[in-house]
Structures are given as C-alpha cells and as structure tokens.
Image 1: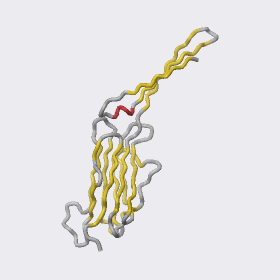
Image 2 (image 1 turned 90 degrees about the horizontal axis):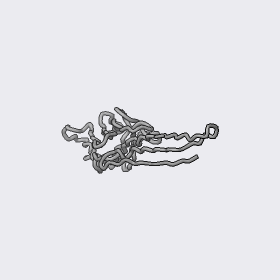
Image 3 (image 1 turned 135 degrees about the vertical axis):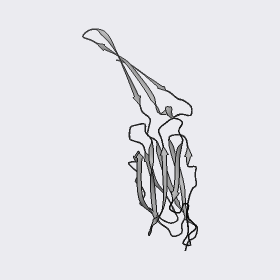
Length: 185
C-alpha cells in the first residue's frame, strides 16, 4: 500500500475560515487478483469548533448574594462540563457560565443569563450575548439590571458594569462583570 496525506489550511486573515481544514488522502491499492492498480481518493472536510462565550462575575458587594434566576438560548447551549453557577456569594469571583454552539458543528451561541439578589426577587442583573459563527461579525455582550432607568433608591442601587470589553472578534468572547451596591448597610 502506498499512502500519502496532504493537509491544506485555507487561511483568510481577519475571518474565521482558519477553522476549516481540508484533508486530502490519496492512496493506491494494488489488487493482486486482477494485477491492476486502483487509485482511491478520499477528501474529508472538517468543520471548525463551535464558538464560545465565557461569563465571570466579580461580586464586590459586602452582603448581597446573587442567585441564579434563568437562562435562555436562542442558539447554542451550556458547555457539557459547565453549568450556570447557582450563586455568587459576596466578595467572590466565579465563572458562572461557558456557553457554546452545537457539538461537532461550526456554530455560534446566543442567549442570556440572569441572577437575582437573594431575598429580592424583583432586583436582578442580566447578561445577553451573541457570539455568531460568521466571518467578520462582531461578538457582543449587552448587560442590564432591574435598576436601569430608575431613580436612585434609598436602599441602594445595583452596580453592574463590565471590567473587560463586551465586544470583539474571533472565536470566543470572555466577559468579566462587576456587581455591587452603591449604598450598603
């Protein structure tokens, strides 16, 4: 048997096509009965890995615990080894989510996750992400809270702001969000 393998990477700067790999395998097989050479060629197209979104919460609050409220996916799912963190205690940093596209497919992920403040179900924070599988499209994370567009509360206002950029290119988006309260008892 005579085997040769040719691996070709098609790279296009600034696009996600680098995730594609074309593998051509050619081999010749000698058929002894017919004393002839049969050439067989096999081409395999391997899809790129799915896109991912990582969310970490830094709870700078002195007394407020964040409790997992809900998650919704327009596309994708929670990575199999990662589940949304059930809570984020005061003065801790927790990676709460790793979201990804479908397994064994070139796909993105889009959705949101929200946490409420323990004992105050009407007070919440939310992160909505879109990490599409498409060349030249920007990955984004938009944040919101129940205190958005509300006057200051004598009980304190939620601080929910990014510590890292909430947009970028590439195959992943990793965002660190800071949670706190402007007034605390």
